[in-house]
Amino acid sequence: MKARQKRLVFVGLAVLGVAAASTLALTALKGNISYFFSPSQVVANEAPQDHVFRIGGLVTEGTVRREGDGLTVHFDVTDNAETVKVAYTGILPDLFSEGKGVVAKGRLGPDGVFLAEEVLAKHDEEYMPPEVASTLKTTHAEGVAETAIQASEATN
Amino acid sequence: MSEFLSQGGYGFFVWGAYGMVAVLLVAEVLQLRAQRRTIWSRLGRLTRMRDTGGTE
Amino acid sequence: MTLNWFKFASPASFYPIAGRLIPVFWILTLLLLAIGLYWGFFETASKLGGSNPQKEYYRIIFIHVPSAWMSMWLYIVLVGWAAIGLVFNTRLSFMMANAVAPTGAIFTFLALWTGAFWGRPSWGTYWDWDPRLTSELVLFFLYIGYIALHSAIDDTRRADRASALLAIVGLIMVPVIFWSINCPDPNQCAALHQRSNLTRIDGNILFSMLTMTLAFWMYGFAATFMRLRSIILTREAENTWVQELLNARRQA
Image (cartoon, chains in turn blue, green, purple):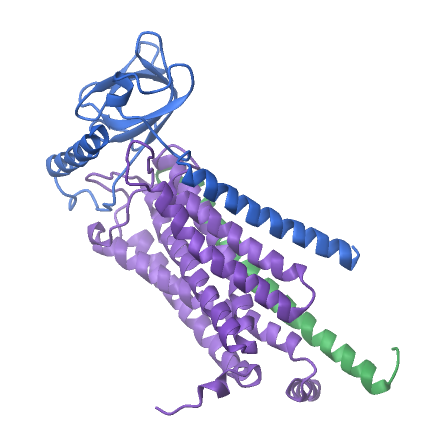
């Protein structure tokens, strides 16, 4: 490759790199990246009715049910103020569990059930072996409390 | 040993991650050594050309 | 200590110093890697409990966190040298910045890769437009942009200055992007990646993670100094000391 062609390629790459970085910066500032709606917002009809969005909250205790075929799972998402029913067909992530944080992407069905095409589990900053870990009761309470705080900030 | 490789069934993810780290860091070192060799041989060639006062 | 620092600022005087330090850094790297990896795989629980009950895949932490921290640290080092070069017009400073960039880029890629392989089993996805992940991706683009821009400009001095400016602008952009996505209104954005908190990590896990971080840091020094010496030889080729080194090598 001639020297000038090489330069052109490098300049092109550099420009692309900066352009990509700036584009991300601008879209980020517009708040388009990584948003979700809380169950309270969904219940208040603030979430889009006709296209894909994300809902985030905690998985309500005791609500995880598998359908007869074993492939579809139902659970409730809550922000300790309102609750939304979710249906999902697929493999749940390892950290998905009742009382823990979850983010689901999908659409709201006509009957108010959120039909998820993707379910992601969240986790906190603790890394402890099982015998040393804080008791399930304490951490569950912490997690619930923190989500409640976030939710009340959200609805205020 | 098979337990170690399997990593609870998550071997693909664990070794996929560790493997890439090993590959890239080793590759980087090998590239740096090759670069150094090239520079010395290039310097040697230039000096020889200059000393003999013409094309080799 | 009255040391003439500017003496060390010359490529000619730093070249042999770097040469003597490289093997030391390699020994430290290998030692720390051995300790860190052994401890991480054999002195820690295979599964976690409590509020974050991760399975064996959590062990990616021992290479993911060190990679991420090094990617950020090396970028700060790069910008530091670039700024010193711009202000003091010292040759070695720009050479240091250029020596650091590729290693920094590699660590950034590894942070993203190891993060992806950790995210898939734990969260359920290889990628998310979360503040931390997105900022790290931007950092990767900045490293690549720096290297590409420098290669694109023929005149070394102008290349040094242009890429130095890009790096400094980038340093401002990263926290802006991070804080704008991690915005205070929880309605508008979500973070998948948790906040970091070293106080809630088990002692054995923390020890291994920090040992691996140190190992990566020593590796960073070794690789950067190796690259620096090549850069010095290339840029200073016309100088007498390089010619003398060449003759000494020929006779050896």
